[in-house]
Length: 555
Image 1 (cartoon, one colour):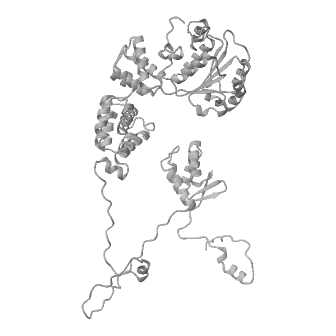
Image 2 (spheres, one colour):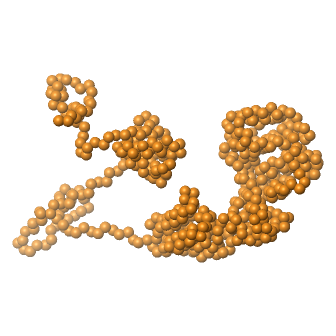
Image 3 (cartoon, helix red, strand yellow):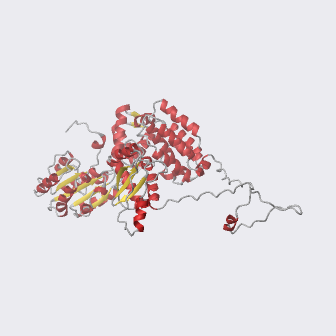
């Protein structure tokens, strides 16, 4: 419609295969197929969002029905190309699989594909987000996809190809769309700026390209948002404010303090930014970005570092005395910091700083630039009374040198007042089910259910017994048992517990909670076999057919 306002990504959508950015391997193959007439009946376009899957599908539809194609490209000026471009061509049908997931929708499609095209040579069905179809819908689509009418071409597009059944994939020509390199994204954005009269600093375009991670549509949306917010002149400060990235200097300062092991400075930066109302999630993202730059520089991959010069310079200075393990540890800690649970609290970032600075004992020594303190050996025991002969014989390597020299005529008498020190009891090693249960509790030690930590609840149990396909967990504390029952009533928590149990025990088991009344300390249930009456009966030739515990009676 003339005069209709369109967003950038629709207004500047590619019209020919040659206009597709960063997907030359796909565009060249499809253009050659159109030029030679070797057209497949079904195509599968898969890849990240914003990389050109739907745009390429529309170009393919126009090329199939173009009145005057040239070298496999649509001419974009014929009536069919214009109608398809404006969305009013009856022979190009776009279906959103996210809204048409059921088998009834596919049955309706199967009935309609039998009709001949209205004005073009082919009927083209573009099914977007095809992975959203149900299993029944996929099964209903199989036959049509395998042997469609000769005038039908189907194009399936998805961002999650692993959810598409293999039977569907095998019936299509698959094309994988890649993330678009940053330099191509910047070049496209610069073209848009020239066409739209936008003046943007080069650093702004570089920042947008790094933020979108190869998604051109997202980059075009961000550029338009900046132009709407700040007019035709866009600066780096404005772009960072709109994107919520905060100040680069602050992020680099925090990352540098963490890598140097300066927890005091790092915590001061976090609390200062929190007091100023800075988005802590954006601060964390900036720190991760700076640590990633340090990791790439340490690995010698300088070409992949697209960060601003001030970030590169700061990171090169700080990584000189650091190991790769140190950088990996810091990056992993901040990558796992859970800001979502406490979005307005600096605590998650503070914990990440402390963990990154301290880490393991080996890392702690590296963080401070000093070697870890040597491990102290236990002090030698003071000489005391000689050990018993049995202990001496048990140690073949021990050769006593005899009592100290005594004056002539004197007789050595060992001190008998000091009792020998008994050896410490051997440490009991966990074996079998106990070891498996310890593994389960340890794996869930930091996993939180709806209200409680799952590992702590499981560790509070008194005993565990495998009964068939169930694992009976016994509690003497009814409160702890009820808490576990409440947690495993939630599907997510139950899956976490049963997955850990299956991995430790080697078989899938369901959890069953049982309560036991705690008995008095040291008391045991009397056995019927210890009764005088039973012993007397046994001496007279009686035979035991069942053994049950006796009931204790109050005297």
